[in-house]
Length: 265
Image 1 (cartoon, helix red, strand yellow):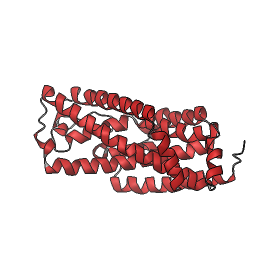
Image 2 (cartoon, helix red, strand yellow; image 1 turned 30 degrees about the vertical axis):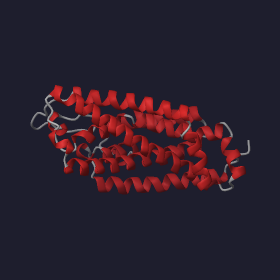
Image 3 (cartoon, helix red, strand yellow; image 1 turned 180 degrees about the vertical axis):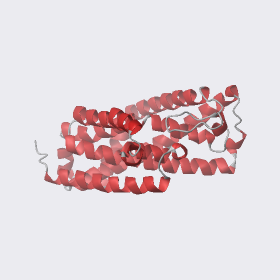
Image 4 (cartoon, helix red, strand yellow; image 1 turned 90 degrees about the vertical axis):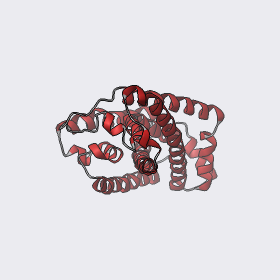
C-alpha cells in the first residue's frame, strides 16, 4: 500500500499538474467566494434557511463567516469533485495502468486503497490552499457589502475554521468513497462520470426537492448536510451515521467487484 501511495503522489506532484491545479483552484475559490459575498443580503426575519441559499450578511459577520464562505463554495463544487474522483479511478482501468501497478505490488485492494489515500490527502491539502484564497478574497470584498470582519481574526474564528475544515474532510472522503465504487464498477471514464453526474445532479436534486425523505437518505444530500449543517434537514450526528453505513457498503461493493473481475484485458 505504501508503494501505491508513493506512486500516486509522484503523479500528483508533477510540476505541470500542480500548476494547473493551483490555477484552477485559485480561480474557482476566488470567483465562487466573490459570488457569495457580493450577493449577500440581510436575512429577512422568519425566512427559512435552505442548503441552496447563499449566506446572509449577518452570517458572514460572525466569527466563522470567513471560512463558512469556503464551505459553501465547496458544496457548489461537489459535482466537479465527484467527476474528478470517478475519472481518476476509472481511468486506471481504461488505460491499463491498474494492471501494470499489480505487477509491482500484488494485492488489488491495497493498490486501490493506496491510490485513494494519496488522492484524499492531496485533496485535503488543496482544500487548505483554497480556503486561504477564499478567506482573503472574502476579507477584501466584505467592506463593500457592509460586512464587519472584526470577528474573523479571533480565537472563536480559529475554532470555527477547524470545525469547518473537519466537515470539509468528511465531505471529501465521502465523495471519494462513492466515486471509487462507481469507478470500479464502470471501469470507464465516460460511463462512470455520466452515471455520477446524472445521479448527483437531476436525480438527487429533482427528486430530493419533491420528496422530503430524500434529504435524509440520498448520499449527496446527506454530504451536503454535513458541510452546511445550519441549513440541513438532518442532524450532523444522523448524517455521519448514515454516511458511515453508505461508506461501508460502497467499500464492500467495490472490494467484491475488484476481486472478482478480470482486469487482464
